[in-house]
Image (cartoon, rainbow over all chains, first blue to last red; front, top):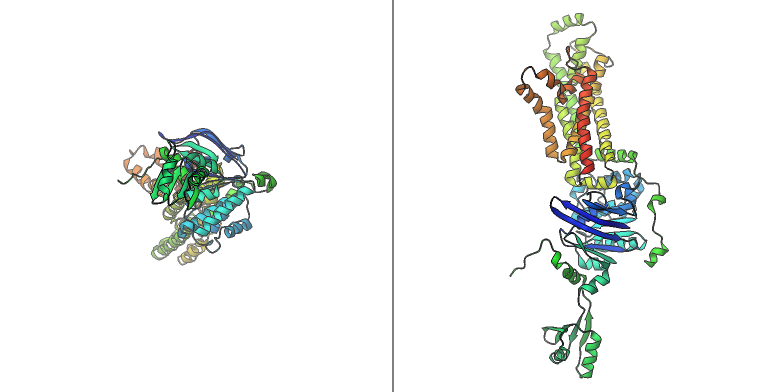
Length: 303
Length: 285
């Protein structure tokens, strides 16, 4: 359980995190979303005491991170893959980390096996690929078998097998009643991994709700209809709050009215339907809708 | 959430005995020091430097000394002081070189963590931070001391064998030799330690090494050139290098006593250590 209370961080006059209050609960995967520069990494760094909050506080299971007697067993953290001395081997890096807490060599070998680093463990980290560096970061994070796992962009640079592994690993981790807090820019990945979402933009919390609620609230459900009588159907559906878009002949994208009403309307008027399918909105659409105002570094649209 | 109630969350503080301890931090810093290339190279260069310069110094003395003059000296040399001083100056002749090597090493021990991002791993494992610097300092000091002292001891028989050719002999365990060699290793270790704390303050390899090189090489000469003659005795003895040199070279008219010389180098270290500690504690990593 991570609890942030009125947490703020300023760098000079720039406000990175502005008075955010939230809780990350055990037993589920909480996704942390937000545009670049929204304050995700800063927030995560404050959780583990690397950055000192300008105001407010953040605790893990009721105590500040630094006050825990066994920090690595309390929280495992992957902030970025480049938190390893490039001149050292993966094995020695993990050994040095483990030594601080008296964690034995057997656990070091275990995390190397779990993360699939066996073949490169004795090589210098400087020569690692992005994906291998990421695996080492995850190995460091789980070294203490922590009750809380904080992962910043864990699947960044991983191969599909690695991505799947991380997804299953964190879901399993949460299922064991532990706390998982992870950020990602990959919306499809997040929608398959997270139960709860925390969305931050311009240093403030935009949404803190279950994944399904976030998607439902941010987008209007659409219904896709294929019919040889598309034009007729569109006329029948016309109403002030109904939008009908037609991207190609015979295909309609309808918002403002549900599939049941459309189906019944078509039946009453004897119109043939080839397809009538409610389209669930994607997390990506919901995310875009929520963060349009909060994007710090926007890509200019090319005209 | 239903499965969560079936498998109660593990409570880490009670489930296993792994806790953060200072002994653990020391072990961790030892693993880090021995598993880094720059460290191994630096210590190798240091040892080779000590042996190489000692060998060279002994050969020069053996081949170019005035043997007749030496024989005369030997008769006057009742407590063997002159010959002891020969040995000490030969064996410690490399300090100006090895001092630079251990200074670079001392800076790299911490600045390497900053430049690679390792410091974030280190400080998440040890969030109280203070034990990291203390642990690094202890490991660096002891390792540097052990390696430089052993290297000097090993160079003694080489020097002794070469100097017997001109009938210059000495006993390693004579306090006039043994103590200066202990002092020389102390100066080198304190140089490494000073560099560690300077490196911690500036967090950059280039910056830290630059400052240490300036302090060790430039400042003494610069002050000598710039200071008015009558100020020099009041300032130059208190430079890190001047005081440090007096730890292992006993001059006929020393400006500082041995305890004073050690004290001055310790004060230099204490000041930078406190500065490093405050900054490490307060700054974002």
